[in-house]
Picture 1 (cartoon, rainbow, N blue to C red):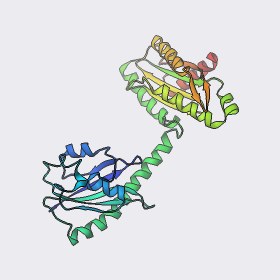
Picture 2: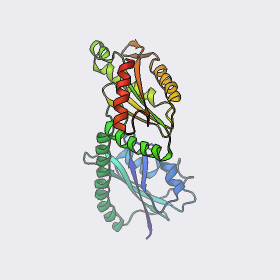
Picture 3: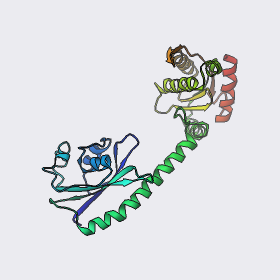
Picture 4: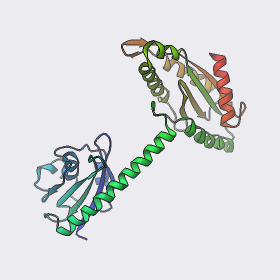
Length: 288
């Protein structure tokens, strides 16, 4: 009862992410979210940076807390002992900390508790990370980070069902890059990958909250635009083509990409995502 426990994760960028801190005010958790680890980042940020335990017996005077003392001023916490949670390769993936309401060092019981908890925390954090990685590989394109065909189909089916209930229209834009194969053949696949990543970035700009986007395969991308008329779909397609056609430099060479877009309207051109995809693909080839 004399301790307050917190668990923070350390993400791939070396930033702290609160996972559990029921005894601390939510304002402190919010302030700590995204704080970089470092040599003077309080007890937890420093423990993760050093990859070794850090005992601060008096928060009020320890220089490691200079940048965080005011944040904890009203919390009643006066001492903090933080230990790194290490992954299977020994790298810090989080921190487990005990806070005290008086200046002190951890007791023997507290040390035994932490020894037991560190392993459990490591197992939990790595398992969660593995689940997230599996989900990422299953539903997102590895190269561009966009949703893949599987995720797009499931999301689009829900979106179309909602449009049907609301008796609204929607548009499916099927886009294919022109002469993409030439980029791969003349400059190599690294240049082609860079082009695809830039195209994905440009396609995501200006997306509305309900719009869906995906990379289907190779140089094929698709956009589902709910609550969109045919006239609006054509205007949106022109904006996409103009955005794609802006020059960019890849491996020292300037490219001016071009694309072709086919449009299928819901529900006139199909009331299922598979039908819309097929018709938009046909329209795209007609445009090309």
